[in-house]
Image (cartoon, rainbow, N blue to C red):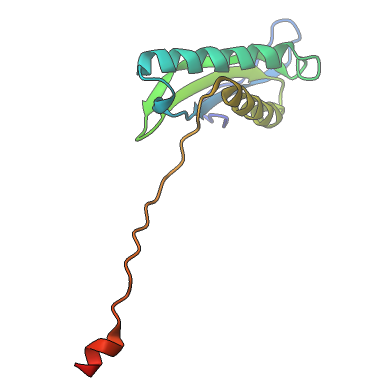
Length: 138
């Protein structure tokens, strides 16, 4: 997740502290995990939202998370991915630590429910080289 420079910081009405806005987050996941993209997207969204709520409730992170990260929308479609926009708020200067922990937890949660992260595939076809010794003798 990266902090969007055009997004303003917010002031928490309870503490009066400035909070950074987490934005521009994408979660890539394979459409092949489910035959129906709509169901697959719903499963991914629910998984990410649950991870965000869990992070906000975790005693080790609850002071850093002002608003639990959750999926705002389907941001785009890639060749083999559905990119989700995840938004939340953190304590000032803590967005990078929260982002790293959120991504780590999302990956673990995806592994638990069988959602695969796509990666590029490369097919190499190897042909035997022509034997030049026989061609020169002819």
